[in-house]
Image (cartoon, rainbow, N blue to C red; front, side, top):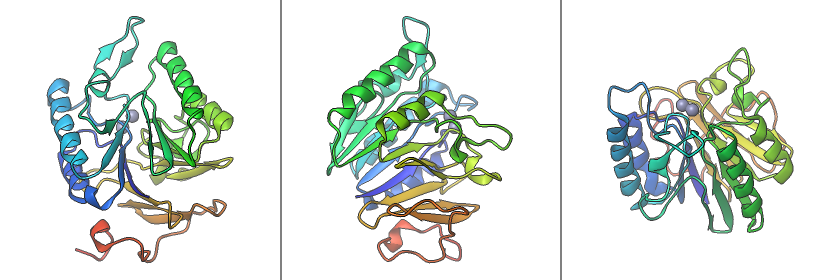
Length: 268
Ligand SMILES: [Zn+2]
Ligand SMILES: [Zn+2]
């Protein structure tokens, strides 16, 4: 399975267009939250209409898996906790989102919502407990915030990660957790786009302006995860222990088709 991970597009339409352009080269495209931007001049409802149209166009090309981030919250539950109503329920068919799980080619994907309070947080606990019963060969979580005390949530002077997520990872030991949220983590000293907690690989794409967005390509057959960004490209082998510093990607692996990497240095 070949997977593209992006997060924190924050209503950057050139970045959405870039994802749309290369989506067909991937079995799965994961968009791990903060699709919208609270600081945008464009009204939040109008943003969500545009992004749903992108989801619709993307699902014509591949499987689309999403979850909410803290910029995506447009409603409140009875307890006054914010949640992403526009990402629940009525998404285009074939687009996975908050609270849902799906098995694709032997991999169980579970999409967790952003939690704003104890009710939604408890719902995630229930969701993971239930999903653990249908665990497949591989289990991958989408969770916008990365775990606490990880280089993937290091902001340069403190950690911004999720304490409960870290506990859930230690309890369930999923194969991978796909995140975003802490935009600067991969770009600052002692931060990173990748971490390992027990057997679990944790990823945070990081955020940069313009197209392409910082992104991660994972190929489970090749057993590799590659990170592409304006600050350089790195890779890990999923069957090996994590080494730091994480090695630079100096050559394109043969499994990665030319169409997948129009953004590498020295190429048009
Ligand atoms: Zn963000
Ligand atoms: Zn965020």
